[in-house]
Image 1 (cartoon, one colour):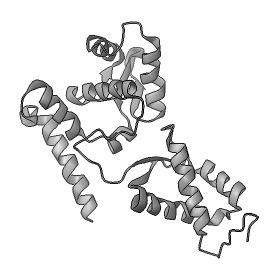
Image 2 (image 1 turned 45 degrees about the vertical axis):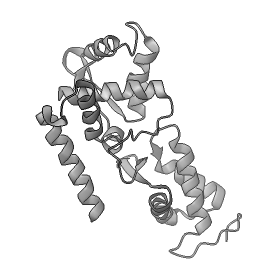
Image 3 (image 1 turned 180 degrees about the horizontal axis):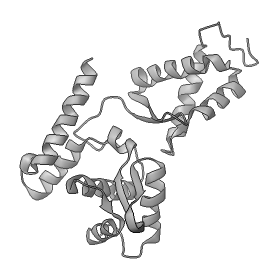
Image 4 (image 1 turned 120 degrees about the horizontal axis):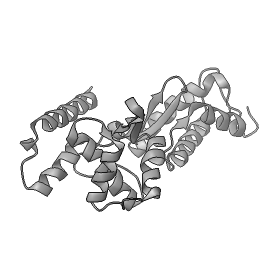
Length: 221
């Protein structure tokens, strides 16, 4: 029995500790910054006296609650540092999946991801600024929005900002975007905008439908 009144058997975490783990994960997810395993462990040890050898079980049980009650799941994004993100358990391809609350930031993010996806290759930094400026989503010297892409979206793992040759930087899709945003959703929006079928872009269509089929197969297992 710990100081909070939670009892732990040798291999069984308490329900209170599991529920607190769920609460902590959902609160931390609001920032979209990956959640560190060590921070979850410290919170449970400090507030519930959870034995270190049960932390893994608590997180596993919390993940089950996230899936069955809230429709989310934990995804490990950095095995070395043990970091997690929270994404929808069963993606919906008919709407924007992101729980990103700021609509202007969301619009900027989706435009950047769509540009990368439709190009089929990493996008040079200067080309990204040109595209977003021409799309009237940012001004030519908009430092704040550039910082949003370079720092905020990369920390949240929606984008990767990678240095190439000759000090040239590129943008790619980050792991959160891969997990959270179906490519078929972006392709359907392009289809509506240009009044053509989504299979007009053959390569992107094959990739998008292949990803969707793989996700459906995983759900059936």
